[in-house]
Length: 347
Image (cartoon, rainbow, N blue to C red; front, side, top):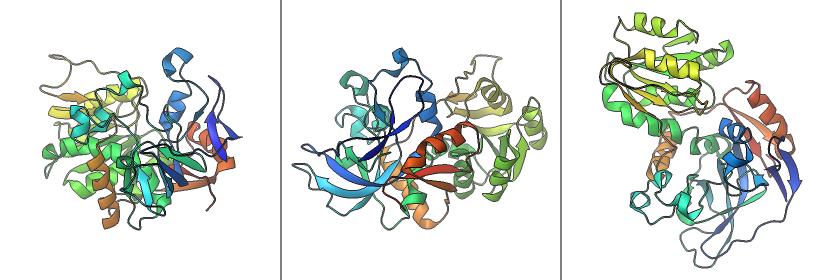
């Protein structure tokens, strides 16, 4: 079968031929319908050998949907032919956090060498993939797989981040979204659907600001050194009740902190290497700063329920598996509108 692999440190991803895997006990084989392309992949491909923490080659793709093609011994909760989405942040299934369905916070993943698909384990950017347990599969229930696959990360991650701040996003409040690409344009829709807050979008690209307006941002502003002042003027000097930074680079993290209101939330979602100093007199009084990671299994179900209700519409560009390296180039160059999706088995 064809697979898109990261094979050498510092090299571009390649389309290669590899054997079709067979499911072992407790595992599920999926025929992959769609796989998402994410900036996290580019971040991983920029790491040194020491930073990686897992061997190469690696089949990419931590966003995946597919059809159950074969079952390993002991699997009884899914059936061949089921259309499913893959929950990505795999855990041990037994620790205190996994018992709550919060496998994204698994306490033993590092110790046991458990990696997400496409981020250490073989991923979804192939004609077939192995899912380690049926508990990591969520039924699509008729959802369009191409529109749904980004929701497994680009939907789940902002949903998890926003859900925490909803009590502060009351009528009259403001939420700021920094970076309105793959995750950010979904976050805007979630904020509009789940809160009464005014949504202000910041980005360096006019094209992405146009997308932000299309999906519901009340204000869309160029992100620059004056962004925080603009937000404070819009809010009558109060600042934003919640700021979600989907870039996470040093300049955007600095802007995020400067936009926040007293008692506000700053959520750094992007992994651009930025950090925010926290302390008395450094951030507004009683500001909460967090860096979330993906979301829980139950939250993925909630995100798909929102998709069923029609409040989330992911903008996608589709590519055949042989075009995957081109999709990564376009993503790196900031040319993807919304989310890029690979179709390993054709349209």
